[in-house]
Amino acid sequence: MLVFKAMEQCSVAEAVLAYNRGFSGYFFDQSKTPDTLIWKMGKEELSPAHSLVAFVNGEPTGIVLNRIWNRGGRKIGWNGGTGVAPEHRRSGVGQALIEATLQIYREQGVELAALVAIRENVQAVGYALYRRIFDEQGRQTTALLFQCEASPGRADREAIVASALAHVFAPLDQELHRLTVNLPVANETTTRILQSAGFSTLAEQVFMTRPLA
Image 1 (cartoon, rainbow, N blue to C red):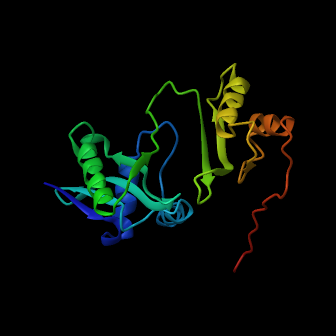
Image 2 (spheres, rainbow, N blue to C red):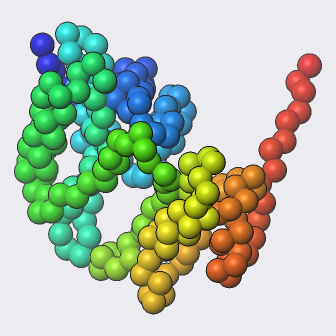
């Protein structure tokens, strides 16, 4: 039996299990701990009240993360990710999650629904994780890069990264805050391309520990 619960009605352990099962098998690791899932929800301003967890026969099986906000006088629904456990994919669980989400949007008076999707592809050559930030008038103000990688061993690695970065920071003729955070120094290809484009280091993070015994 398929049952949906609002994330706020679930335990953190149930939400994490649903998320990790739902996003397993992607071409980059999406797994979360309780801390990192809570951090993601806060960082992306996702709503536990409007996000759903799917249960099949009492087991967390899928999840959809939602956010509803006002932009330019319009109520917009944002699907920040939908995942279903591999053994339940193509069984109708994902479609039912989307239909339940659209019902929430209708109840909340949402006028426009948007989503982010990642096409599963074992032949994927690279990826970029980023966020675009808009003001109250719906104008983009910031392009924020978190990660950008090409598949190891690719002879065209630099071209792949350059193409991904051009997409992240587009449109290049528009005045935007363009920045990246938590980019590993070991990611030499991305760092070199950013530096050649005029990016400079503002601050470096240092990992520090202290023995307690």
